Image 1 (tube, rainbow, N blue to C red):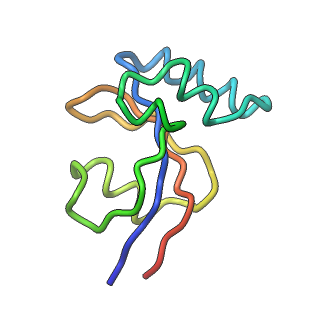
Image 2: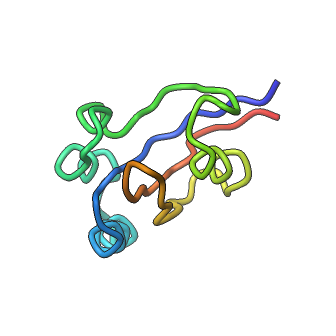
Length: 93
């Protein structure tokens, strides 16, 4: 069964999401950025969402996590909650 582990950063606006992505791409630590900026309670754990299976997250999020490149910061991904940066830390098929 497919499963994945990911961390994310949730912010209300796409521009904020792009700014944070640039910070990470320029060397800032993903977990530190998540702790400082994410609006999701997971931000306190550096954005770590733990392990989950297909269908446990909203559709847009699931699609990225189960098809995107592992280890790369993906996004912005728009969902009903706002804009996400997603880093897939592991995935099994």
